[in-house]
Image (cartoon, rainbow, N blue to C red):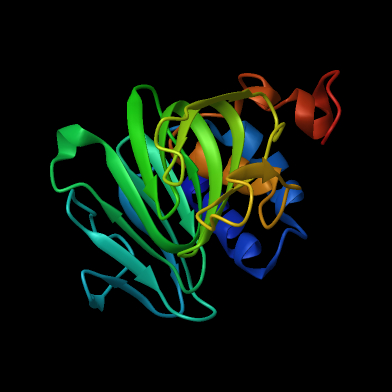
Length: 230
């Protein structure tokens, strides 16, 4: 368990510096098992606050908390069966009622992986219902980038509240922009930006899983089986 935690910390450190080197570290982690790490703030870089107060590694996060990051800052944390990599200059809050399973992305970017069960994501331009997914969000007041990396989502754009867009993907199949500007299309296709598969592996490993497109162990993806790397 201690060896695996050390490997995951090394992965997190490599992730902060960019994708280079992450794959080799993950390959080492394959033999270390998939025991979930303890919940809470797993890694902090730069300025990170919880409810306006300086955060610390190992700090537990509770329903009702708001996590914010400053410039050139990042936070990786675990809440229950879910894990998150929050980018710089972002703010994310979680529902005051734990049973509600609501995450609000106020501004900025966050990569998330979720365990089983229904959850609601609230962003400035939409409400998104999800179930056992991985997704990346970049949000500002007028436009939100949403990539459902895998899983199922139902998107209701704020600009068209009667519209429900059902999205199901296996591997970054349908990234989109969701817009509040009445002079622009409400939803349209976008490329994959600012997140990668190695980061998803890191987050899923923190909660004892592999992304579904790697199989149950990740062996295929990392060259020990028949699969090919994305």
